[in-house]
Image (tube, rainbow, N blue to C red):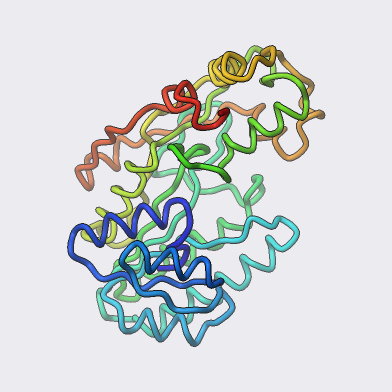
Amino acid sequence: MTGASGWIGSALTAELIAAGHCVTGLARSEASAEKIVAAGGTAVRGDMRDHDLIVSEATKADAVAHLAFTLDFAEFDEAVDNEVELIAEIGTALEGTGKAFVAASGTPILLGRVATEADVLDPAGPAGPRARTASAVLALSARGIRSALVRMPRSVHGEGDANGLIAALVGLDRQLGVAAYVGDGQNRWPAVHLSDAARLFFLALEGAPAGSVLHAVGEEGVPLRQVADVIAARTGLPAAAVDVEQLGVFGALLSGDQPASALTTRQLVSWEPSGPTLLRDLEAGYYTD
């Protein structure tokens, strides 16, 4: 597993080990390695540029889970290039084996209607270059590999989330001095609790059909005005509409209506999300206390 010590990866590691699987996780640092070992897995030191190491581990494994990716947008295109090249090399090594290769992705930003599993990622969107990654993963299904995408919504929330978009939004709100939303705040983000996201990834590794696109969406769309109101109640900041230009990279994320459905996913792999809602986790103070 790449990203085994990350937010979703840590939860998936625990889920897999609890089910009796052995997990080998790629670790960029000693701290990440210690986290993987503490969870009951085996750590292998390296990073996403260590193609020979990753291909070797993938060949020895029964299944591969790919959750790692850089959050440094200055290196975004370079990281995608590396990722696509690595996936091609893994494809060559695993061709004809029927092994699972499941990768994390994001739900489409369509602006105007609910995104479904049948929709493709927009190469011109905010994370557009990763559309190439998604295509590379799904192409493996034609090479005798049980590849699948698990597309994550804007918020994968839960206690301990320090680096997700909701945590970043609260930090931005504190800088601005308001719990911000755009327009009337009725535009929506899809969301899922961490436990449900990890469970879907687990189900995908165990049995998703080759070429599957799955949506880890527990809530189709949470109005951002409601998010702002809860942040305001927890922090004492006033909830207020702000000019999109004040939001920097958050502008496109906060201004667009981005709901997504998981109906096909629930039917395909019998996934039933049951974790707390986004507003409930906000009300619990996980992002503001």
